[in-house]
Length: 340
Image 1 (spheres, helix red, strand yellow):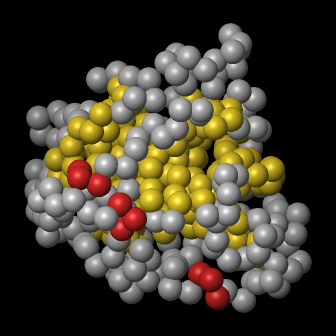
Image 2: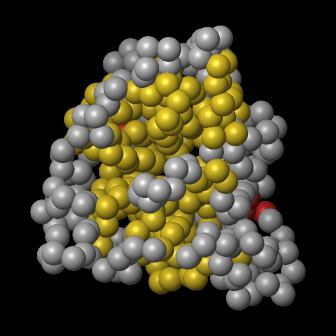
């Protein structure tokens, strides 16, 4: 359990920072016997300002140890926003220095005065310290690709954030899915550094009552009638979701390493949780092969009231208890249910 449990409102099993502000979980990864939880963090007061990456580890997903800040902004106008952490098992980045320690690679959104682009950092000591990649950005902002009608936008108004990275075994490629505000984009890479845009999805699918954020893409063992694996594409909506707060919707479909195909009608809206405060959830990378679970952690909060919670002046923000994501489907009737 966390050490501080006698403070008023302090949760016992929901992770919360010792002090100050926390929001989205980031970079969920299992490595060398440790479950890592990175998260959006502001270390000076319980308000969302120029965001850092906080860091905690656990052996059992229940008792957490808070570690030093993982990633710090370059200046007070910069935010280190949400992203992913993966293991570079085959040294495709060329960053590995010893034969026994594989680099942990963080890919995250760098934000300054509204400008959003994707940066990389790496760790050679199991996530304890991080080095920012000297040739950032790895995916610069190209405002011309953000609209289906190809109308160029003001870069400071473009939503281009929250990359989720995974490895696609059939194509042998790294996949990155990222929010474009009213859709998601898919990128591919062989080295985690150079990325190519493959496709876009969602302009006319699902709920668009708020901004799409924090996408995730999850593979399941279930298949379609023609033996294609089923995938869950998850996006968070910052407001006006099912309970009028922040929420998470999902799409069930197929993914070939380049394109996601929604198997339900475009106007079908599926919610992962029906409360107002289960948000920005992502699943763990690198769960051991013998463990077939898809495990998600989400922010147990809503942007409608997050910055006025009475837990201040000590802290604000806590994580939901880790959940197992399952997919129940009837491929003959095209009915799919995801349970979190």
